[in-house]
Length: 251
Image 1 (cartoon, rainbow, N blue to C red):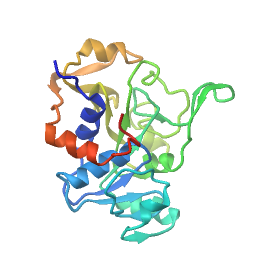
Image 2: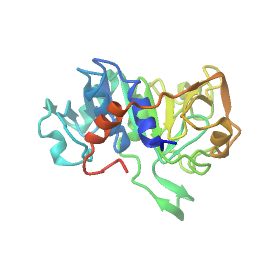
Image 3: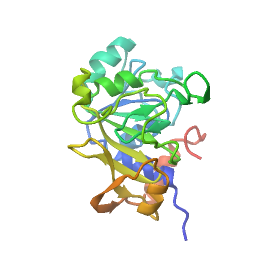
Image 4: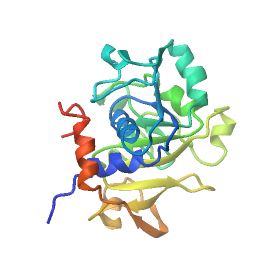
């Protein structure tokens, strides 16, 4: 049996959310691969934006978003205030990474465990809180799903999803539309339009609902008609891997 590259399945599935001509606000880490792949494959003429004020970088291979080379051939450089204000509010979709995601799409990129004595300290918010608060819509990418990475409640709320349920964002005065999907190496998740809770929409090839529930911190519900995430074609895999020849993001 051919070994499935589940990280590639996740990244390419997320990239399909990006359409031709979209303005895409890109977070650090795996979201860079998602946006680059979309721009080089089906979403031609899409424009990539990021929190450092780099507009439409002309990248041919993956580098970290903080690398100065990221802006070398960009269309425009502006301030972070402009990026997180004007650019973010006009973007069609934002893509964020996360270390933890909970049942309402709140995400954690700060600490695992108790904040004062964490078992792991992560990079922190950067612009993630601003993006999750302000973006018209955003999706989350999280690799290596397991119960500790999808708890019922995140250890630290770095970036708001739907907080504790319906109307919570509105009560807190958050202008953005909130998360629309979560992509992991197990499945694709969407949010119930009424309860705002995550549910399983699509299982990756070879993954069962029991597998997903084993690696989720609560008994997650599933769509009445579960879909199957398409397996990437050899050509799609070649393109994805060609964008990261130095294995910055890919194994």
